[in-house]
Amino acid sequence: MTPAIPRSPRIATRLPFAAVLALLAAAANAQTLAPAPEAATGRITKTAGQAQRHMAAAANPLAASAGRDILRAGGSAVDAAIAIQLVLNLVEPQSSGIGGGAFLVHWDEAKKSVQTLDGRETAPAAATPTRFIGADGKPMKFYDAVIGGRSVGVPGTLKLMEEAHRRWGRLPWRQLVAPAIALAEEGFAISPRLNGLLAGERNLSADPLAAAYFYDPGGKPKPVGTVLKNPAFAATLRTIAENGADAFYSGPIAQDIVASVTGHKSNPGDMTLADLAAYRVEEREPVCGAYRVWRICGMGPPSSGAIAVQQMLGVLEPQNMARIGAGAEAVHWFSEAGRLAFADRALYLADPAFLNVPVSGLIDRGYVGSRAGLVSPDRSMGRAKAGDPPNKRAQLLAPSDGVENGTSHISVVDSDGNAVSMTTTIEDGFGARIMTKGGFLLNNELTDFSFAPEEDGKPVANRVEGGKRPRSSMAPTLVFDAFGRLYAVVGSPGGSQIIGYVAKTLVALLDWKMDPQAAVDLANFGSRNGPTELEKGTEAEPWKAALEAKGHEVRLVEMTSGIQAIVKTPEGFVGGADGRREGVAIGD
Image (cartoon, rainbow, N blue to C red; front, side, top):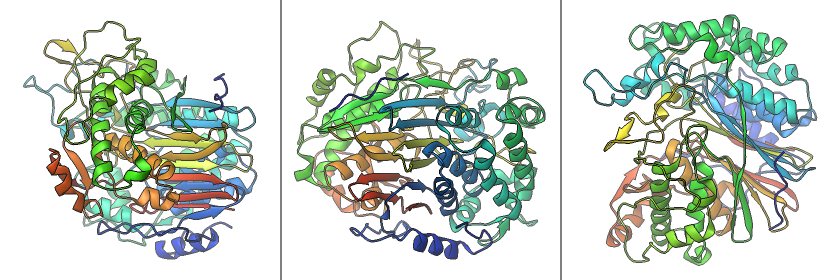
């Protein structure tokens, strides 16, 4: 048991998407607190959602509505998160689902404790460090590795949900699965976002099952508003509802997963039934640290998210961020903090079962303070080097940045004050581009490992190994006030950019006092120890010249976050769902 934190009505699925969104907005009684920025990137202008008893925030309104219905029925935050995840598997299949993995951070209001569960995918036992080395002896091109069975890790999301339900669930398991079963059978309208992603996808249609599901006979994505039914997934969910997660990790569903992975025509994998049967959810020690009067808690290794976020906040803390405000000066400090955090991440972060990760040293206030001293207010450092944190064992390692992409995030607070922050993924958009006969896509999570097993003769911490979990940047986060009371539930998708997205949102909430919707919609920015990145087409673009004057190499890039934030107030809850996606924050 993790010790307590120290004190310091159902939506009609056949309606057009716009009508569904309008109904949900009306049902949530959303009110404008402060206008959220609107940019030329296609962000949806939204107002902050408000509720008094409970709230759910997710990247699709049908998923958020399923979570709210579970909360209305007396369900816990975990119950709602499970229902949301299963609906997301249908309406946002490119991002997450039971074919992938997740990290969950849970707050128990009665016990005043935080616990974290690791449902990250694992490499098959047969995996070796040279898995992504091509015939020419060089690391494979990213999509040559992604497409097919080679990239598929043993999924963990379903086992994580079942374990969380065992600990913190209230309603029967079958009741939580029911909304997704109904939606799979009755169908849902293809949203503009899903249609657009299918139109831009170049590899999914090569899979016969995926092609038949997502595309018309001419190979074009089924149009917006088309009712998409998935009876195969409904059947899978019925089996899981009746028999629990074991029905996924053994028996016909497991056999189909293995056949799909090993039978891929051009890029087969080596997953076995034994790999699926051996999968276990791991409880990890939460990573908690102070930021001003606040206490920030998140997910530890194999995720680098909480460590990197807390390192960044530690660099920012000596600065008067409230005075600085959102602008070029703030981006300078954010970017320099990001360089330092990502330098440490590249060298020290990996699966703790395979490597000693000096967590306490990496977030040690003295160490982070010494790193902060490397930042000049007037000049960018360019590229940062990893530091020498305390409590580090002697290890001869080489740094490796790695590549990460896709994902979704769920934030929930129930009527008793319990909370869930859960980030969930199949890695790249549409994962490995393999759809099973069970109606769900498989992840490509193994490409989150470093492709090169060594650099300059030194092993890379995040190299591929059998049974290992790849490094992640997912950063599901809980914020507590000076009295140990829950204040905010935050997280985002976005691959390695998640770290910057979450740090930006925390500073926007805590220092700049933005309401959650304005905070999540604020332009994204930062550095992953490379160029300083500004979100293209947003209010951040004019900051470019001032940053270049400080020596930053600045790039304007698409930064499609999907931040979901809920803040607790004396009146109840205020929520924000990232306008870059279709979600909502709703409650009662």
